[in-house]
Image 1 (tube, rainbow, N blue to C red):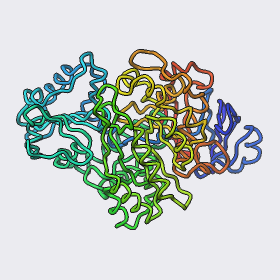
Image 2: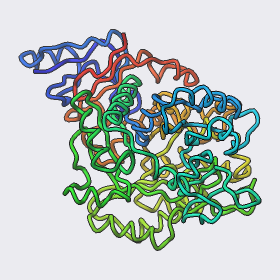
Image 3: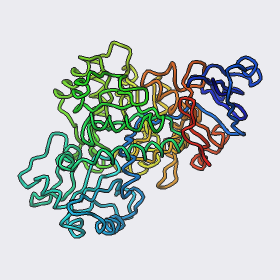
Image 4: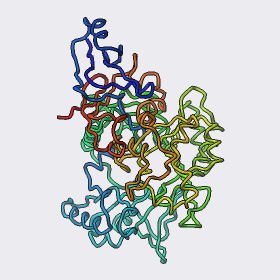
Length: 529
């Protein structure tokens, strides 16, 4: 038996502002759309429920195409440094927290961002040592490509003057060769590798807390990369299975980090396996770092650091080896690549090792661009995960990193779409706020959260294009454009219901719109009271 939805504005997202009066859903699938009276007459023997939207606005379910679900849960459960405005505020919060710790417990906090501080600087390990010499401390930067640790953590990780920088990473040192406590990209793993894993009960709780929050924000699913952490592939996937769909229905598409790719194969699993709500996705690689910490790999040096081109996480030989490993099993690849040199290297590998089974490779971020590379990207088969909120949080300081000319060529979401490149929209939470309405707002307005100015006005998306990133785009990038992302016969009954019409609302005020309900598989997973 099924449910008919009616009583509001229902956008199909098939064409600009196309609406229908009612939708009939049965067994989690959209059976028909059209006029309410006609649907009732046709399916009266199969309708046992009615859902009156009461004037609300219904869209295909929003999906975040790139986030870290467990990381988002950790942010909700830990000290959140992302809104703090100075190093001193961070240190004061840590000092308050340290008195609550048990013996030998780590003090871990996430989200510091010196670019939004009144006095931008990097906290030194000595400042953390002043808070505690007994407990190891680790602070993760907003981009997750840098950490700051105290001397206790360095001691436990055996990082000394003699420790060499790992490939794809850097141990920042003072004039004597001692670590300052600031570790970039792969150097982070030396410390992260010794942190005791959280318990399975705590891991399940973290997934549950994250999914509850995502559903409350109108998200019916998310593409995440967590399986190489938290105790490994088996343990982390098991935590997801304990929550989804037993507690909630939420479509988690789980990328598989190359370090646990063999663990997946050992279980006889491949792309698309794992269950409808815990589906295994592409092999995940990191090609470079992040712009904020000047580790994104650029073709030209940083404007504010002329001898620095960023960091390539892997050598060319090892990167090709990973592509070959994935292609042996006809597995798609999802690559973090922010800098234009990183994107160039990935496009080269995609062309050299093409995928011939119809599945899609994706480049995650592709923020820094140049015209020559854009031509190569357009001719490739790659799809792109864009994070519109990066425009709002990175400008204007990105101009310091890149210079005016390169900054004006970058974050070119509109150009990608106009060139026919399929793009999906995500947040990269917990790096940015996970609320999809903030991402849609940033895509349409390109207004900085820092100075309120609009950057790259010609790259602004229409409301239809911006919503499409989180509906049609997120479906297409995982080969589900034929059954997800639209309100259409035969598609899954996943809906995001808002109290305002985004097509009629001021885009600068999208952040004020409320989620009234989130429907997954035809079932209410969240309803605003």
